[in-house]
Length: 59
Image (tube, rainbow, N blue to C red; front, side, top):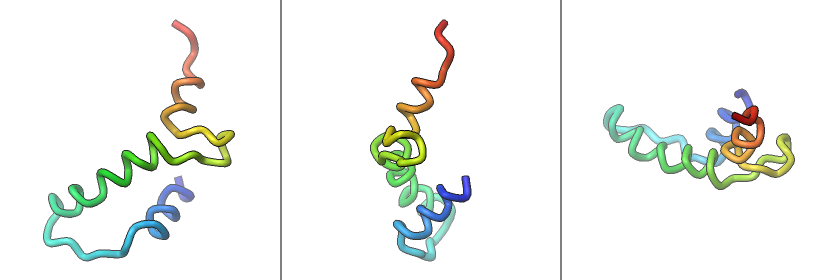
């Protein structure tokens, strides 16, 4: 989790937002990118979403 926050700090501009809603509107697209598109070396160059899917036990 620390890596996730470090990446957010490095890749997102440190911006002061008008309110909570404005902050969420700006940050949500990056969180989606981070989880669905950005490959992570620590999990075999998969996205977190791919890793989670592959890690689930079969039903």
